[in-house]
Amino acid sequence: MVQYKDIEKAYGTLSSIVHKTPLLTSRMFNEHSGNEVFLKAENLQRAGAFKIRGAYNKIYSLSPEERCRGVVAHSSGNHAQGVALAGQLLGVRVTVVMPKGSVPNKVEGAKSYGAKVVFSEDSSDAREQLAKQLKREHGYVPVPPFDDDDIIAGQGTVTVEISRQQSDLDYLFVPVGGGGLISGNAIAAKHLFPKIKVVGVETEPANDCYQTFRQKKIVRIAPPKTIADGMRTQAIGERNFEIIMKYVDDVITVTDDQVIAMMKFFAERMKVVVEPTGAVAPAAVFHNVARLSGKKAAAIISGGNVDPKFLKQIL
Amino acid sequence: MVQYKDIEKAYGTLSSIVHKTPLLTSRMFNEHSGNEVFLKAENLQRAGAFKIRGAYNKIYSLSPEERCRGVVAHSSGNHAQGVALAGQLLGVRVTVVMPKGSVPNKVEGAKSYGAKVVFSEDSSDAREQLAKQLKREHGYVPVPPFDDDDIIAGQGTVTVEISRQQSDLDYLFVPVGGGGLISGNAIAAKHLFPKIKVVGVETEPANDCYQTFRQKKIVRIAPPKTIADGMRTQAIGERNFEIIMKYVDDVITVTDDQVIAMMKFFAERMKVVVEPTGAVAPAAVFHNVARLSGKKAAAIISGGNVDPKFLKQIL
Image (cartoon, rainbow over all chains, first blue to last red):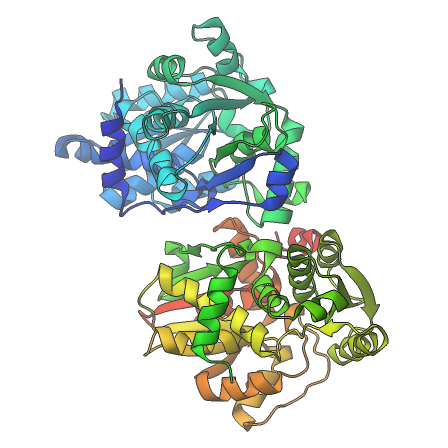
């Protein structure tokens, strides 16, 4: 299992690579929530999401021989862009498998960083199968989206940064897709803030981790229809399961409508563009799903890569 | 004339009141510009613009008797919101005169902070006259938008913050409406970065300061038609003129189309919502109007209070 020291090491690796994203605050957000809220703005991260952290840490850890073979990743979008950018920065050839229904600007993003994009059917299983096939055919090294120690350690650096921006926290809210982000950040949070409660957040249609957490075994759901494309993963990973069961205090859900209202508030009141998945954890605090009062709560805005057409609809 | 020590004092007054806004960077922005660019994100400031800085510093400096009388301000929008919020925080009654054509969410913003809003005709002269009338009738203390020492000192704190985020700069680009923001920041910049060049930026239709700077006397223009509503001021103030002639190195202009392209880049690539006036100084650097190369340049994003309908059009 990933240890805090792995995350600290990744933090060193990434320090000159990633943006130190701001921790945003808003009196209006606090008043609506009834808590003092700190929003970690990974939508302002390079390539528009936290994914560069894990992707860079993973590719950086490869041997020279592995780097020469090139890497393959499968992703609904942000992981693809993160791997593409990391590959570009480290001079490693990248192929990404993306579902046909991916947000167009996420596909363009991956291509703009020099990656080759291959399309699969829309389910997370389908894109995983295609990535495996490409690995066999071309010898590419896989860069998994979440079920990997180096990925988990890289994503956990978000909370190391938070701890340098805000020394006192009662709660940390993290969105859960495949579980990479929450795994790394739960480990970091419990080390850096000994009394903190870590809460995972999903949308209701994509509640596989919510079920997993309660049934204490990995639950796999049908490809969910949810506005939050980063949550369309059908099940969390093995490593993520172990870490979540050990370090996470609760998993809760928000509705797609709550996510949309949150995105609108972000754009109109806080002047930041947040993608649906990025608004999931903040929405839980904004709408106070966990019914807290007067707590210091951080929530991770995981990304900002929303289709401009969709943002238009919301405004 | 305002001295650097006045700005430093204002910085102390404001330290627990204003957000320390991030200095955003983007490789794509840098590549497009050909310079290393630091964007001071005052669109993420409280009430969505830098105006709270001057407004709070001004009202804070009033005597108890003046505070009891209440204040009046005239503004195309952001100054109104800044004064309204400052009044709310300091327990001072606020009346604001806004042109009929104001962006609706700026009017709503002022009202939401408890201000009374009175509408005038659209020219900056018309709203100034109405504010004077209300002052005579009700004894309100005026909070001028730019031609005032406390306002200038407050606005100058933006660059004090920048200097704590980035110690080395060759250029500072500042939007010019009435000249309050550039006055304070030119004084601060020349003190904190001895070799810095300070450049004012207007849109072409609103080029009164551009003309003023070249003719070395205050030029008053007809109410300009420009996308940047914060630039519709017809002339800079007396105090602002003196400071600009002493401390500013150049005044340049961008087109409305360059401003729109900048806003689109901000929303789609950098995930921040910027209003037209807020995009003016960055647009000069992005489109490299000043034809610099390899310089370290900061540009102030003055605000983010754009009408959501207009943002929709741009996307």
